[in-house]
Length: 106
Image (cartoon, rainbow, N blue to C red; front, side, top):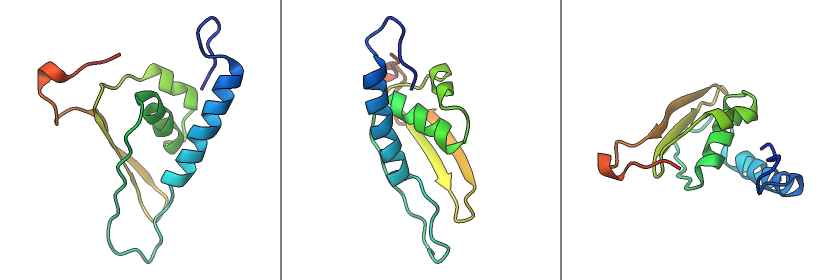
């Protein structure tokens, strides 16, 4: 999460936020046990910036790439992690759950 040169995000704040988001990432994203027979699902409700950052981490692309993504408010992102460790971004910013007049962006 890069700091802003002239905005409200100072390096100390960015470092503290990155640490918290990385902790949450480690708690949420992991390989399923090979013995697991059923699918498991976790629903995470958070800020779009956190979602975009975590998508970059799970896809193993530079986390700064989140700055080049935009997702609507109240949208759904689905990430599948398989026991083999492979990852699939099933959808990013899906808004099929919303009527068109309620779809907004920052």
